[in-house]
Image (cartoon, one colour):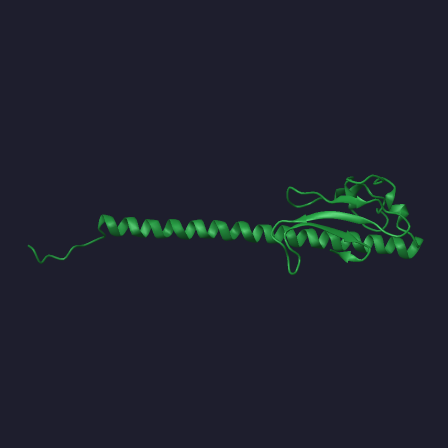
Length: 139
């Protein structure tokens, strides 16, 4: 029976197939983590766009950003505490979708403001790391 055909898979073939499936699963998990980080970065930028719109509406009605300092009159205060309720519904519940936070980097005054936020993976031309939203846009 030396010429009998072998049916099924041998041990080595089975180990190779299991190894390939394991590699595919690991790559899938890594890619999913990257996409989740990108989604959180996209949400952060959308939040900053909303905050910027609220500050601009405040400026157009008051000719100053100072009214927003009501509640966030110290550097490091959460932007959700700022007095922008009239211009941004739900600002009191605004928070970073991950483990970072949106913090005041420059207390709003007549001429400007700054909000600090962090990107995990970067987005478009913005690198990962700390960024600032000011009256001139996102930097």
